[in-house]
Image (cartoon, rainbow, N blue to C red; front, side, top):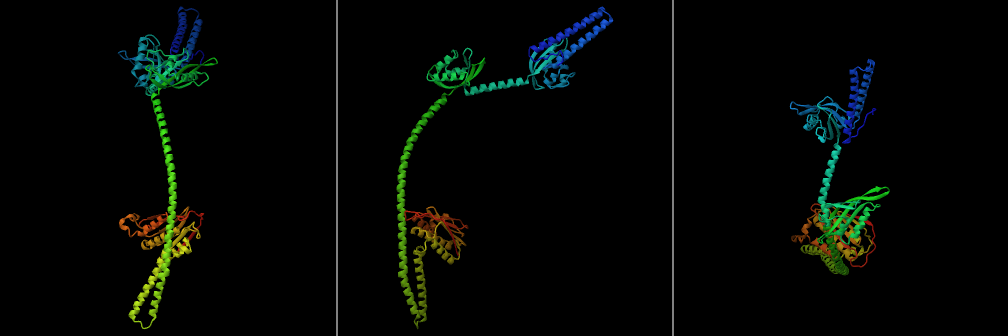
Length: 595
């Protein structure tokens, strides 16, 4: 900073008066020195050399004053300019010239190179207000201080305008940009408005306590919530008198904790207040303490907070607690009833399980009895009727062998012999179907393979046989073996009659305690919904017979089929039908192809 310059800070009342005083002193000093020189010059005092020396010193004083003024002018932190107001013929201010500006002018306005230019030229849309106020200063000679927004610059300014000389249109203008302050004030007002709105919406009362003098102040909602009248005295003691007797100790403890120098200064208390009419309200007080430091001691200076009415919430909580207690009682009663019902159900399940076991044993015995009867009938057909048919056949052959038998009689004998052979074959077939010897001699697995091979050879359709987890020598109850064999037999019979298949798969597998058999073909298939049709009883008699056989051994039969996509028959039966124990599972896979 040049020597003699003064750096002014923008203080509303101090800087402008100081600046003006300094300018007046500088002008007076220059005038005094110049006046003394002129006086001496007029009186002719001294020699020419002395007069020239005085002139030189006066010029140096003028230069020194100009330098000081320039240094002050350029070092100001605030914008400064000298303008000359332009009036029209009616002596109304219309515009003004910029005669001189300091560097801060450009920083405060953003305008450059304004000296010698008019305001209307720089900002054509400038408000008339600026011209009127500066014209008034020039006319009246009275300074003015104001704050105003310059719309052309979208900025707020704090302005001090003062006249520079009497009977002159020149005005000095000191100003600074206060846009940020104005924005802060606007934000603060908006924040206060939002806070007031939030308090109104939340129906909160506000209060403030000052440590100095133990003063308590509050708004109207606080007074109403606590049961105070507008003219009632308000103090900590008066407030505690309104607190319910059962809650005073707790509230007092919370307040002491909030103002304790070693604490965080937070207040949170839920309590009841008793109004003049005896009505009780539940209130929640929250606050924050501000502490001051006096030396090494930390003292509570002020506490501010809010008060909220939570009576409705507390009533709801009480109702919820009562409802919860009632619900818990009902749950206990219901739980006891369910426990009793569960115990009875366990007993019923145990009894039903015993009954099911008995039923399964009876079913097994029934199937065994049925198979024994089939076996007896098979032997009777084979041993009795078969013997008679054999004798008949031999007798017919002996008659046919006699000579001299007429041709007509021989023809008749040949027809009878063929019928006897067909009858003998049919008796053999019925005897075999009543009780296949393969089940008695080879077991289920080999019996299925043998039957699949015979069926394939008879029909010309290959059969893939796959056995999973069933050893060939594993013992299975007769009821299981017979049911599986008969269902497979009927399924392959249906394939031969209706499916027109080119390939058949037969799978027998062990699944835990069950035996599962699958017969699948790639034939024409059928609509399974027709199985329940009363007009289709004769055609689906075989399928229903299969299902009934499965039910006799507590099994199930499922059929999947669609037109053009073949048919799959699923048979599942328990492996322990007719016996009370199960054997250890053995897992192996055996594949066989027939045909």
